[in-house]
Length: 461
Image 1 (tube, rainbow, N blue to C red):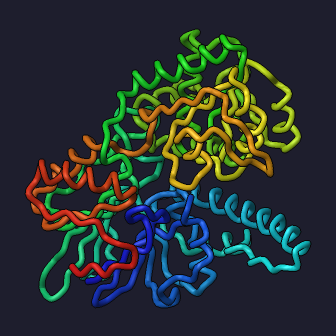
Image 2 (cartoon, rainbow, N blue to C red):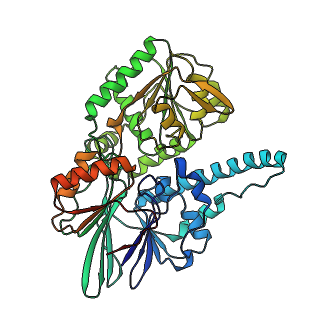
Image 3 (cartoon, one colour):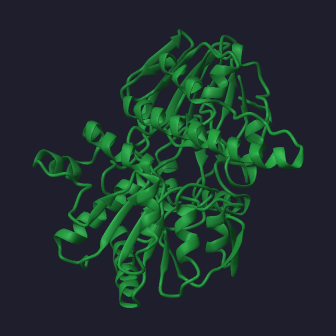
């Protein structure tokens, strides 16, 4: 069999793996590129979409799901396997993605007309997203999916966001069975809402494992909670606002969960907490329908009749007008908005109005890819470019990685330690410097061949 990484390799975003066996050709994930790789989204697939037999989707984040409508548009007719929660969340993510693409297209077209230039059509439209729905085929965790006598897989709980999975795949060729794991995004441990990642089967031969934080240990959750609370209190004491760029799935819900806890413990002073993201509002409402995916503590909260994501200070702002009005508030406002890496969305308006004041704070609680505005701010740039203006960065910048929904070095190494029959490990989904460090950590703990594959490299198993 041959595996070709088309994304999520060193310094490349957009998870997509093409697998060719004697019987079938299929994909694991089909994501949008992000950050410095965004322009690659308009490139044609390096394969014939009509010849792909099926797709396995690990979870709903756009860097794993975002090019599925384009795949179907190009002639894919197979099934898309995922969990129920992943399907429902993917629908709202893709519809939002199509809307953003269309708005960006209209804006670029107006500018291009003035210059006498042409602009490319969006990668897909909302109707293309709707055309994907009939392709989805729902699986439960640990349910065996037998594609043929020689190709079998199951989805295991990855603990990253609700419905997220890693894939345990068995392919039999020439009388030999090969057992492979594709990790998708593995989650952190001991966090609210989602369960910890499930332990993998022991008899795996080949492992494709994410390495986003393979070079570091996260702070424990309680330390991060205390740091988060202190950042808010210090900002309020300065008479400022708190801006939190946040991903619509999982991170936003986790923040709301924490704010509810702070409110109930009387640790959150009177203030206004704005959830300024229509997508995040939709995702939060959808979460309530899938509480079976939650950890036991969050389930108990729901079963007691309480909403774990609501508290009296919370204000949901769906309309553009309500979003703009937030900028009239000069102190004691907490604004949660997307996108999580500040590469679009309403967060840009809030950064423009708050980033220049030393009274305010920006709290980053998630990974910032190279090339994104969020990464530039985290890396300490003194001025950033937002909506045609150079904005001075004077607000206090906090980076709290303990909230990460990605596994750290120790969790990844623990995952690997369960595998007793490994022949080779492939490091994916990370920056090269991190991968090189993680490779050393693995080799110091286990005698196994570790490789860092290149994009479009042919991997023969």
